[in-house]
Image 1: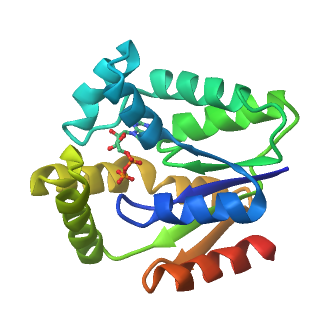
Image 2 (image 1 turned 135 degrees about the horizontal axis):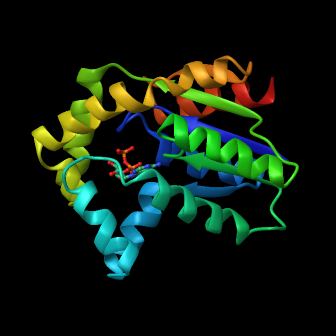
Amino acid sequence: MLNIVLFGPPGAGKGTQAERIKNQYSLIHLSTGDIFRYNIKESTDLGVMAKEFMDKGELVPDQVTIKMLESEVNKHPESSGFIFDGFPRTTQQAKALDDFLSSKNLSITKMIALEVPNDELISRLFLRGKQSGRADDQDKSIIANRIKVYENQTAVLAEYYKAQNKLATVNGVGSVDEITRRLYRSIDI
Ligand code: ADP
């Protein structure tokens, strides 16, 4: 089993790179942001609830997010591993993920942090907003809030995985192919 947490601020390129890693290593890609957006599109109860937080650039409450993630993992008992994209985002989520995986005799193999400076993030997100129509990418104050939430609540997770000797960092600036190659190298070590 290869279980990777792909980590980094909003706009770091997690979604794009996770798709490639998923194909290369035959993993299941679980993006909490994509799952929430799917639920919003389908107007499920979960989607209606999540939208309230996402529209402000806040995190969806831990309990809801953890429960959803666990049920997604449980849908793939035959998988040869997972790539987690956008999860965990808080210490409580990271602890819940460790407990949940260990109850199945599994664990996180590695957390790979994509590093991108803030000014680059803001311009990437704003461009994505124009191209994709994603609501939370179209408003500079919502983008700024997501980066602030990342710095206040999520960035600390690098320390959490570092303490377990599982942290790797990868430069997230460059061409998409270049960054993919760096990520493969980091996984293959
Ligand atoms: P980005 O990485 O660009 O912020 P995502 O698609 O990963 O985009 O997430 C979009 C939004 O979905 C977040 O701003 C947050 O509101 C919500 N979300 C995604 N993952 C989580 C999570 N693990 N915990 C809480 N909220 C989450």
